[in-house]
Length: 215
Image (cartoon, rainbow, N blue to C red; front, top):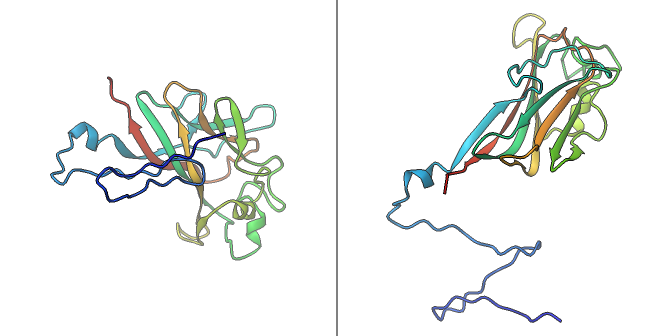
């Protein structure tokens, strides 16, 4: 049998500590009024933004590549030395023809595939501690499929010239995906179709990073 425990402030005000629904103690970081934090403390958490890079060389961000079921092309965000990564949003960006999302072109995959879209589709998943969890319930084969997962999108027909459209899809995680230093954790997008006809296809991961200082 557990013993009920209460945490109260010791000044006599009887302020009581609160616990979340997940049994975590609610705390608030209070900075001193003089704001005499060190430079290291001020720079510990930093904005983070990166392209997904090809897993083989970690150099190219261009995802308009030739992939197949037998030879898939994988793009990743992986661990970085002396950093913890907290990924909060992923943005898929396309420049291409035939991406007017106000009409039937949503059933295409831009210039790469007419309706009903790609043969195999894009796979997007998190890989943490060796456990892969798909962010897409099933592979994305046509542009309209992104609507199932995206929190926001931008579609501007003809934005880049006659016949060339801009389209982006934003997927926001309910909690940050954490990629730790020294781990095999990663975010991954797997391409298993021929996307070489697309003018531009890149994906950006956004969030923040925690810089690990030597003890």
